[in-house]
Length: 227
Image (tube, rainbow, N blue to C red):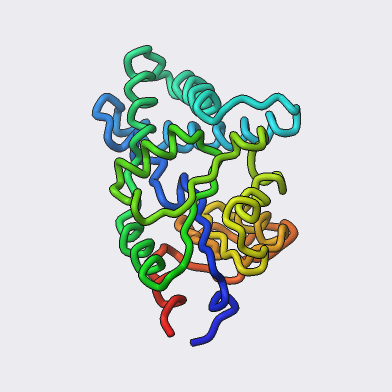
């Protein structure tokens, strides 16, 4: 089936929540009571995103590793789990988050079809390298782009512009893929064709822009490359 994505030369992926399961750090750490795992994961992620947006508005940038640590400190205190050893272990585990199970196959299919692949993320280059290497997908990604290059977080337009500047593909021939609704809608408003990988079945965002395609996971991305 022909889709508006058929002419895209590059597929650019968000990292956290799209390729990598941000909940896997807490899930892999035994020293968390079962009745607090979900709350800790949710608060940590929510504060992490909030701090990126607030720092961007304040024009008070710091790197994503520091934001992640600050958000964890808040989450640990909020769940009465504050402990220096626990904090460090969770931060270490965040460096090697697990990829979602379909990710290697999806990337391999895109590469086999001659499509440029990239990651565009709030993460620092070191964080992204660690997660990509841990997941064994290094050879499947052509470009790794970090907001460190512009000193502001998504959804600032300067971040999405990085893909055009570094990959060298026209805006309307880039397909951007994110599990975060705010990110997917913002990338669409910027002018990318967008796949919203809506893993958690969130309702539609009330924001400018609209994704081209909605998916539950990345398994179905393979069908878009079939001719």
